[in-house]
Amino acid sequence: MSSRGDGSRTALIVALLLVSLGATFLLAWQAQYAVSLHRAAAESVVRDYAALAADEFIRRSAAKVGYEGYYPLIGTLTRGLAATGDLGKSVPKSEELGQGDERLRAALPLANRYFTTLPGSEALSFEVAAPPIEVRSWLSEQLKRPRDENGPYTVLHGSVADEPVTVVVSEWTDASRRKRVAGFEVNLEALGAYLAPAMEERSLLPPSLGKGEVTNAAIFVSLIDHGGVERFKSGLREFPDFRVEASFGDAYGGVLEGSRVRLSVDPAAAPRLVIGGLPPSRLPVLGGLLLLTAALVATAIREIRRERRLQRLRAEFVANVSHELRTPLAQIRMFAETLLLGRVRSEEESKRSLRIIDREVRRLSHLVENVLQFSRRERDAVALTPDPAPLAPRVEETIEMFQPLVAETGTRIVARLDPEAEAAFDPDALRQVLLNLLDNAAKYGPRRQEIVVGIESRNGATRLFVEDQGPGIPEAERERVFDRFYRLPRESASATAGTGIGLSVVRDLVTRHGGRTHVETAPGGGSRFVVELPAPASEDSRG
Ligand code: ADP
Image 1 (cartoon, rainbow, N blue to C red):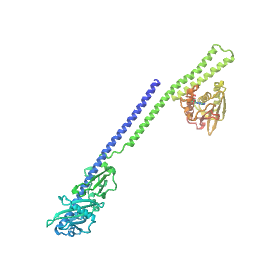
Image 2: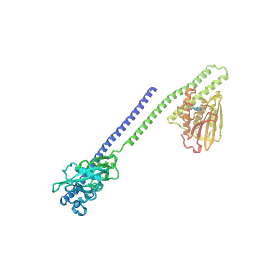
Image 3: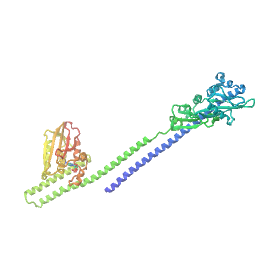
Image 4: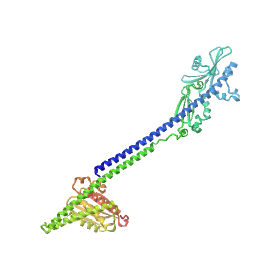
C-alpha cells in the first residue's frame, strides 16, 4: 500500500473515530434531555398535587371559620339581642356555655369587640371599650353601604391605618320594624390557633394519592391575611421547587376573602406521589462517560499516529540499510577488481587495497550484525549467555578490532580501563554494544579526535563509557536517541549515513543484562555514552 493510501486511510479512521465521538455526545445529550423532560413532568405533577392541597386547605379553613366560628358566634349574639335587647347579656360567654357548645367555646377567641346599633338609631354601641375613631368611622361607612343579606351574616374586610380589619355583621328588623345591626370585630391574631386543629386532623392530600402515606408533615402551609400579615403557619421550612400560591376568594361567603395561602410539598415525598419519583440528574454519569469516550478516542488516534510514524520510519530504515550496504560493497568491488586485474603498482598499494577491503568487510559485517540483532529482538529471539568475567580484556579486543575502521581519519582511541572491573555479560553482546558506541563516536565526531573508552567500578556497579569530541546530544533528545529508528533532525541535513537502530540495539542488550544506559556531556563537550552493569553477584536478569 502506498504511503499516500495509508495517509488517507489514517485520515478516514480518525474521521470515523471523531464521528463516533460526536455520536456519543449526541446520545448523551439526548439522554440528558429525556431525563430533564421526565423530571419536568414529575415536578409538574408534584406541583399539581401541591395546588390540590392548597385548595383543600382553603376549603377546610374557610369552612371551619365560617360554619364553626362566625356562624354560631353571630347566631348567639343576634338571638340574645332579639330576646333581651341588651348587648351585654347577648354576648356569648364561656362560663354560660354548656357541654354541647364545644364549637362555640372554641370560636370565642375569634370575636374581639361585639357591637350593635341602638333601637331607633344608627349609632353603634360597643360591648367593652369602643375601638379607635378610625375603626369606628370605617365601620359606619361600611354599614351604610348596601349589602347582600342573603346569608346569616356578612364579612367585611378592610384596612385601617395600615392594619387589616375584619368585621362580621348581621342585620334584622326589630319588633318596631326598625332595622337593627349587630356584629363583632374579628381577632385576626387568634386565627392561627383556631385553624391549627384543622391541619392536624388529616392530610391535605387525598388518601388516594401517595397511598395515604404523605402526611401534613411533608407539607408547608402559610396563610397570609388581606393585610399581608401571616396568620397561620405549619411546617418548618418551605420547599421552593414545589410551591404554589392560591387566594381564598369568596369561598364560604368570603370569610377569608383577600387572604392567600402559600403551600409547598417536600421533594422527599415525591417518590410516593409520582411513580419512580423525581429522576436524578444523569449529568455526572453522562459527563464521565463522555470524558472516558473522548479519552479513548484520543488514545486511539495517538496510537494510530504512532503506528503511522513507525511505518514511515521502517520504510526509511529499509532505504537507509540499503544505502549503508551499497557504499562498502562498492568499495570492496572496486579494490577487489583492482587486485584481480593486477592494476596495483607496488606491494604497498596492494596491501592498502587489502586493508580497505578488510575495513569495509568489517563495516559490512558490523552492519549486518546490527540488523540481525535488531530483527531478533523484534521477533523476541535474543539468546544471551552472560558470564561473569573481567571486562578489560574484551574491551581491548574490541578496540583493536575497531581501530582499522578509523585508521585513516587520524582518530586516536584512548583506553582507561580498570583491570579489576567485572560484570556478567555475554561476550558477543558486549562487543556489539561497544562497536556501536565506537562507530557512533567516530561517525559523529570530527577527524583526528580523541575517543576515550573507560571502565570503572563504582558502588558495586561497573561502568563502561565512550567519550567523543563531537557535537554532543541536546538535553531534550538524550532519551529519544535510544528509540528505534530515531535519528537527530540534524542528520537529515548532513551526509552522515545511519539506520537509527544502533543505540536501540545497545539499550536493548544492556537492559537484558539488567543494566542501564544513558548519555551525558563529556568533559570536552562531546557525548559520553554510559553503560552501567550490575556487579556479577547481583546479576539476576538473564536474557
Ligand atoms: P544511527 O547512528 O545509525 O543514525 P543510532 O541509533 O546509533 O543510529 O543513533 C541515533 C542518533 O543519535 C544518531 O542518528 C545521531 O543523531 C545521534 N548520535 C548517536 N551517537 C552520537 C554521538 N556520539 N554524537 C552525536 N550524536 C550521536
